[in-house]
Amino acid sequence: MLCAVRPSIYLEVEKFSLLFRTAIPFPHVVIDNFLNESVAEKLVEEFPRISSMHRCHHYLFANKYELSSWSSLSNSFYILHQELLSNQFSSFICKISGESLFIDAEVYGDLQQANNGGFLDMHADSNLHPIRENWIHRLNLMIYLNKNWRQEYGGHLQLKSNLEEIGKKFAPVFNRCVIMLSSDTTYHGYTRLNIPNDMTRKSIVIHFYKQEALNKVPFRKMTTWMPEKQLKRSFAKLYNPLASLKKRWWG
Image 1 (cartoon, rainbow, N blue to C red):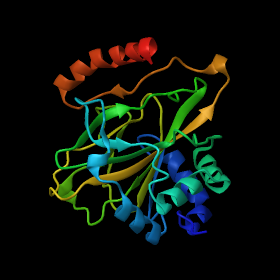
Image 2 (image 1 turned 90 degrees about the vertical axis):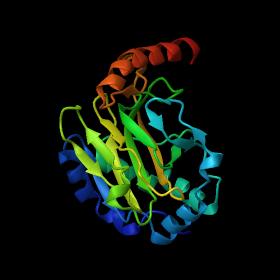
Image 3 (image 1 turned 180 degrees about the vertical axis):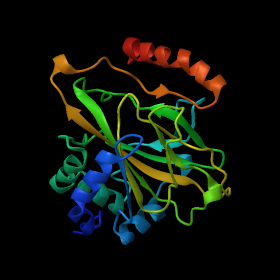
């Protein structure tokens, strides 16, 4: 069976683990040429049209489209999904992170896509699994599928531990993978897109969890928005607790 991830990636796990642990502003690692090129090419070719995806419901803070349950879209997506669930890949992620982490086979992440003008404000992700009360969200893995990406297109992934620091920026270039810690202060987002109308910014986002005893699970926290523009940030101070309250009352 064709592997999705390049086999040589697994052989460099110690190097990636060191880069992850020592990265600034928080643990992360960037891995280029992550997938076998033939698989990556097929994923671009078979990526769903943006019209078949749903708009992110955080309208003020994000202009992007999402699609979950993507493993059955095509054979290439199925191959990727199966490898991400494999023992080999699980061991790879656990060695990089230094934690015992896993993917939910049913709620594993999203395909994400944005067209010209799209953006994602700085935020820290929700801390728990949507359903499992004792599964803590600990890691994100993003695979970018954007060929011939130019600097002036924007859409750079930004990483900050607080909004006052410079942080790091990475272009979402073709076949680049970013693995990053997820915590209350791992703020990330991407800059507004300035791309031709026939282009989109495409990515695959996977979530990893750690199981904890119920008496050690923190209070559920929803996505915390921290926009860089002051007016939006002021509004987010109201929006964040209201969103958490809504989740507690209505799910």
